[in-house]
Length: 458
Length: 71
Image (cartoon, rainbow over all chains, first blue to last red; front, side, top):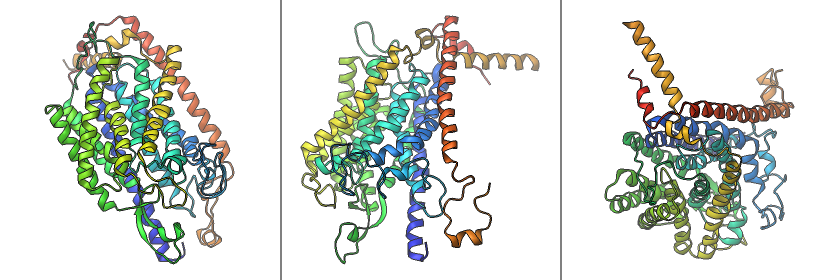
């Protein structure tokens, strides 16, 4: 950087993403507190460690291949044509936008005095990956093996969400070009896909012992510690601010980018490089949170667990179009999404005996899918990109997109991986362990230590 | 082995990579991948052993309550 303006813009962008990463870390703190709060006393520590260990597992695999996948699969391959070089295969090599810079051996994948963006951009996406795996983590607590969950976490966090982001959350992604897919703050590319993935695992994993009565009636295994759940969800809300900011490019000159001769237009943009403002999306974030909370409190008759979760579901539902919606539209869309997700959760639970311990499939999966479909109608006709040759946003494209996210890249891989692990006897913990509690040995050792110390003190 | 031995000489030359042992990245990658895969194998085996031991104790659903430490 050899002039002050370039240095200021670059280092502002670097610092902007760095702040988003720190904020998004709170999402994971929140998920850990939330899951432990929901789990029973005899499973607390294993529940905590299962979620905690996804951090290193997803991080190292995101470094090894997850980031590479995001940049390599934008054309499918063989579905779309890159606007960068006309290629239809994997985007291998070829400068900016190609996968070579995400190769773990590339000079940019380290401290590099010639680059200030790669590391923080990589990290912002990585934090999305943690969230992806953490969404699944909550649904399967108290009966999945930690080793099995680790494999599932890597699959969703470093493979399948990365593919869907490459397809539908990249300025050159084929879903954006051909379908007019629009998902500014990840209703589908994070939430729907993870909800679908969790449902696929749950269908194989089965419910916790005692969740359903002999006649099939579901029982509520309620949160043991509502305060941890409360603080956890507030922290997830807080981290979600960082998530929203991280989905933006903070400063970009769209004039030359769009080939508009002589035009200079500095703005923030979304991931598709179309304009929005951090100011406007802040209003939409708050109104969609409010719409979700209002609807959740109403429909659940003031149940705290569902009210807090509905605030999250409201944001998730409005997120696909929150770069363009009016704040009041965001609020109403959020409320609609919450009602549908809440109803679907209990219908699926009764009909298919699915035990989703934290409502993750509803809050993330159903609300995300509903958000994509609504976005297709409300933003019908908006350009999905500023580049030439892209389909406009439309309902059919968004419905197909929702099916791809929830079904093709979510439910299907989750179900297949769970089936493979289950057939090897490596998915679910033994029945005797589930009854005794995963932490029994820890607790027994701790009690023995206490008894020994007390005996010495007498 | 130091990649940079003088900032006043390196910066004007446009040095970008500053970490040690530039050119050996693939070795570090190989070690990291082996470490990662070994971790899965070892911890999965440990978890199975722990489950087997606990299952053999035949504890009931409320037995853990006798082990709640009070400190």
